[in-house]
Amino acid sequence: MIAPAQSLPTGRRHLIGIAGLSPQDITELLDLAEAEVAVSRQVEKKKSVLKGRTQINLFFEASTRTQASFELAGKRLGADVMNMSVASSSVKKGETLIDTAMTLNAMRPDLLVVRHHSAGAVALLAQKVACSVVNAGDGAHEHPTQALLDALTIRRHKGRIARLVVAICGDVLHSRVARSNILLLNALGAEVRVVAPSTLLPSGIDQMGVRVFRRMDEGLKGADVVMMLRLQRERMEGAFVPSVREYFRYFGLDAAKLAHAKPDALVMHPGPMNRGVEIASEIADGPASVIEEQVEMGVAVRMAVIEHLIGLSAEGNT
Ligand code: NCD
Image (cartoon, rainbow, N blue to C red; front, side):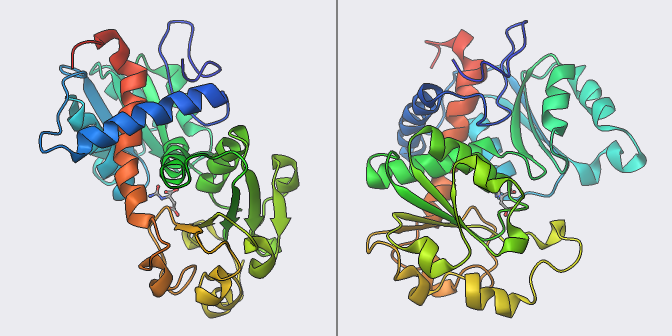
């Protein structure tokens, strides 16, 4: 059972965040995602568990990989998938979030996958519509499927999450990826560190069960996983970093900084990457990098989430 705190009395189920999921919920989703990896590696990639169901991807914020990933996930499960992005919608004409949601709701979708630039917008929308809702990223709040795909990637390499040292580095302040990962990794018993300049750390970060470092050499020492974050310049008003050159010098992942982590450490990045800003190209493309694998796991995890939320009543129909 997923999202107990997030589901409505009518039995509709949503995935709004990692908050509210138990360690068992998370592990079940990761196990289901393993099976979906196998499906995606077959020549014939299509299941029919969601045949006849309608999924709408409603993106109020630009996205390439997440939208493509949700689209493929829905299609591989047999659903009809429609993409709707803000640029081509009436939101530009002044329609509100809820108006848009209600209009789509009237078309009777089974699932809405929603990305929005405001924290809390997806949870609000989930209260208004009659179908399941998956949060594909809301402001700096949560991005639960990203944390799940990161966990799946880590688990496949390390065999577990518990007791691993994971260093999350960079623009933690603006990052929903960091927030969801901190919640998930803590739930599964990892030792979570964040490494960032003070200007890119949210207040209250020390209450999230992480150890805070302001130097890469200290924060990466003995790490099993180094998770880099994109410098989210579009969310910054004013100067959070002196210059990107300066930022790379102190916080960009290069060979010298990575040398402080364990020799078999994994390097991760949710994408899109700013090469030469938060990560050197030689590291992004190097042997420790699992960045492309994260993309593959993204489809599998989203298949698992969708199947779990809306495919259950069609069980046995694969
Ligand atoms: C992340 C996001 O949108 O939060 N990217 C993604 O999901 N592909 C991370 C980011 O934008 O930096």
